[in-house]
Image (cartoon, rainbow, N blue to C red):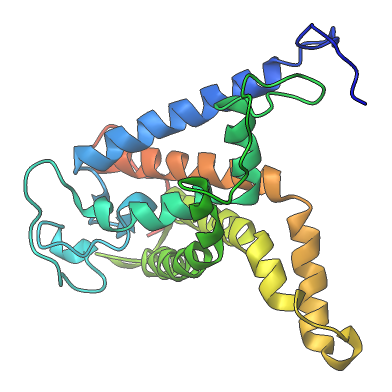
Length: 257
């Protein structure tokens, strides 16, 4: 029999601080991403071939031609729509359905529950078996899409070493490499990736290679929360740096050429 306690919680610490910081952080990043998505400018630095990950791949006919590494198979978009509209659903879907982000926004935004030993305001709970939360089960498919986009980002980072003056290295190159490194670590640390690698194996001894990879991914998985935040924040910082260079506000710090 459960204890009948009228108070919402008996905790005396600042349990509300963590969900407050989480919802504030996600809110600020969402606002920044929305502004940059619909700005439709300052996403390409032609001199150094820097392309922000928020606009990669740029497949619309309204993209800067040099920034369209994979051609422009899509026509110009009407109204307020911009090229990122084709990739945002996959990136957003991967993040929203991520096991860590579910915990983060369930607690921070929906207060379900806001913290351990704190009662939630909802009277009923249906889990993720009905709409719209049943869509969380699509996470593994968003993982496949995000993996393809990650490979494209890696290609962009490598291509950026060849600018208008040939091979060169600048601060932007380092930022792009760090960005794809964090994105790769976050993507590989995904629970779906871990399950794909070793979740269905019954005998690890018969699959030594997959077992070794499963161990490495499991290690990354232990840092999934940290990688989720660091990769998300650094994508914004990468985009901001490229936008500042593209707009002429700052110059790229060059080390070679």
